[in-house]
Length: 431
Ligand SMILES: [Zn+2]
Image (cartoon, rainbow, N blue to C red):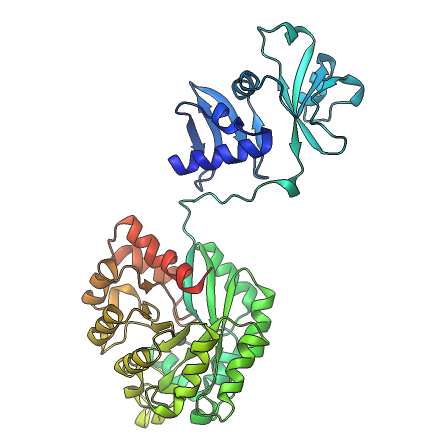
């Protein structure tokens, strides 16, 4: 991989001096990788040039040292020590200063740690000298990311597995939904949640707030709560606020969520919240979010909330019709929209909108791929491959079962899979 060698050369330049990278990795060296795809060692003609440590530094092999020695007439950061220090260094101990026989002009006391470079056997120096290279302290090292083949799934749609969401905000309509799938409403904590994700290679998730208080009478999952959880796991969670569009202070709540709590976007569930997003009275809210420059997730399609109960607890699934979002997207072209879930029974409308509106994206959350309409899966692999993302709808759907179903029921080329499972979300969320 040309890119990878270029990165390795940059690190060598930094560690050993200008043009060291070209000297060290001349020709066509072979890079060996760890199981996760990170460079581990570099070889040429079967001989080890370097080992790339987890601390981001190279340790030179004999062949690598010879290449560097040949490349520099007077290296800037070389230390010569007597061979009596070799046993110490070989065991990974420090060479004593009394063994130092000479240093290059660039070496400054306290400037770094030292790694050993045995002198080449066929030089005059071989009998009594070892060469060592001064290595910059870790804080001075370049932070270079290697592309890795290890999956780094991003879940664009996760709720809390705690009572705050499932019992308090969810209320009876959530019990209806659980009953529909024959599951109990169990709750658990965020440590377990994050661990569960990590076990299957999900490295990031969007945690969603919820406020349907006006329409349902249930308390919200507040922005403060989402921010608190995000702050406990800042590498794992991106926090999106739930704002109730039927509350008079919704615009102020939206501004506070971003400006004071540093949340990263918004989530609306139009069916539970009981509103038509295309109605003009909500324009100030969309304008505010557009001006704040953060993305917004709208629910797409039917909902199982209230399923099977008389009147579906009064919830109206027409508010989940993505055509209502087409209207919002047309009037707020800078509003970045993610239509959550395959929008059953309006998947065709959803695909048309995602195709036609540059600012509308979608995710596959809430559905195991084996139940997703074939046309959606087909579009996700072709003309919408840059716009479709992976999401679970945790804790209703768990990452492991979703990823297993995805592997079993889809057959995308690897580069498409990477887009769908993390790259599109990384771009959308600015990760
Ligand atoms: Zn959801």
